[in-house]
Every structure is written in structure tokens, then in C-alpha cells.
Length: 323
Image (cartoon, rainbow, N blue to C red; front, side, top):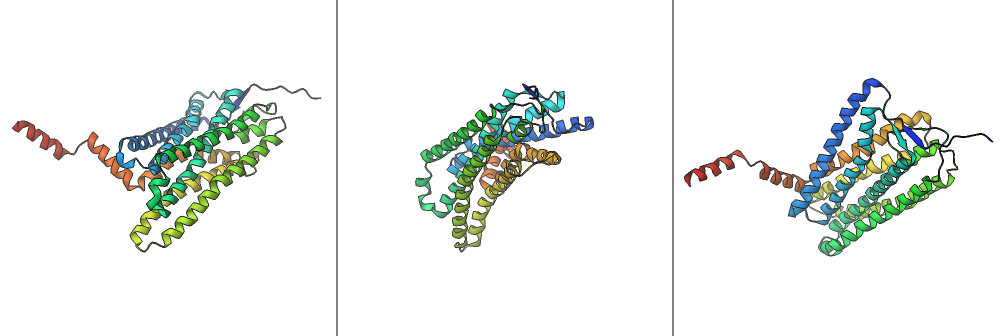
């Protein structure tokens, strides 16, 4: 028998150990985080305040923006704190708690993207029955199912992670806690944990990807039957944004959880982790808003209310003088 010290605290390796990169990385990711908060919060405000955006598609998009706010806020503030203070210690309880919320939000986003693809399928393939099929009651029920399924999945992984002991190493090769990094430093038998990752990933992944794939098969069949090129391009533009987000999201998640990783892949893992925890929550609102005419119109109307044009101000002053 070999004596092993059971660890109660872990250390995050962070993004870089080079002193010259700490300050530039801090300001760079601080800027990205602030832009992420502004863009996603702006989308939520526009959807809530503009009556033209009170439709199911934007209801789901508002939920996605809220998820991205939480998603980014779960990892980036801690990363900025570590870059600024160089204190990277974290307790095991706090680490697994972060894993729970991270898996929770990640699962919610996966299922929500599936619901959004079903919404596009209903709007394009069954436009006459769209308001009946996608009623507000159905939308709320779908979102509630999304949150409940993801909560159950993340709770199962977190409970099994609490059973792990850590004595092999106290360094997590990342800037936040995630299951693959915990598995690498655990001295417990992780067979059940890895089995749960593949079973839940296969079940939930197929449950989200297969409906999305079938939805877009029917969408493309319907679009090809449209005679007018203008209407066809308009329908395609509404689907391109959603498909772009899905490819980026699922590509980064599959790379992180289902590809074999060795020690010389740690830097690659960090790059992928930065992409789907920091960059993707910033890209999502940009992809949806920049390609969407309704968002541009809503933003312009809000901007006019905040800062009216000069000729309107002059006309108001002229009328006030006459009075």
C-alpha cells in the first residue's frame, strides 16, 4: 500500500504563465466580456420592449441570449480574477459546483438550439398553422422541458463527481473546472463517470441532433419548391444564422468531450475552451442580430427614441418658440 494525500483544494493553470501576457490577456478578455454583456442584454431588452419581436422565434432567441450571459459570467470573471491577482486556488466543492452549472447551461443551449430548429421548421413548412402549433403555452412548455432535462443531466454528473478523490495532481490544466480536466487528476476509478459522459452525450446528443437534422431536411425540401428567388433567399437567410451557431457549438463541444486528449494537447484544449466559453457567447448575438432585419429595425427605433435626429429637435424648438 502506498500512502496518498487526499487533496481538498486545486489550482487552475490559467491561460498563460508568462508574466508579460497577463495584463494584455486581462484587458483583452475584459473587453470581450463587456461586449458580450452589452450585446446579449441589448437583445433581451429589444425583445421585451418591441412588440414586433413578441413572436416565438425571438422568445427562444431571448432565452439563448440569457443563457449566453450566464454562460460567459460563469467562467470569465474567475479567469479575469486569476489573471489579475495570480491566485488560482479553488476548493473541490467550488470546482464541482462550477462543473454542475457549466453542464447545466451547456445542455440548455443544446436543447434550445433544437427547439429553435423545430420552430423554423414549423414556420416554413406549416406557415398557416404556425400560430396554433407554436402557441405561447407550447413555447413555455418547451423551454421548461429544456431546463428540466439539462438540470437532471448535470445533477447526475455532479453527484458522481463528488465521489471522486484527487491525489494524483492538484493542477487543473484549464482556466475553469470541467469534467475532462477532473478525470485526468483523479485517483479514483472513473469508469462510471466516463460511461455516463458517453451515454448522456449519445442519448442527449442524438435527441437534439436528429430532430434538428430532420427539421432542416424538410425545410430545404420546402425551400426548393419556392418559385420566387427573393422569398427563397429570405428563408435561407433565417436558417443560415441558426446553422452557423449550431456548427460552432457542437464542433467545439465534441472536440472537448469526445476526442482523446493527451498532455501535449493541453494548449489546444484551452483554445477550444476559450472559443466556446468566451468567444461563442459574443458571436451568437452578433450572428443573429446583424443578419436580421427585424433586429436592425428595432435597434434603430430605440436609438431614435434615445437620440432623436437633429431636424426633429430643431422642429420641436421652433414650435416651442411659436407657442
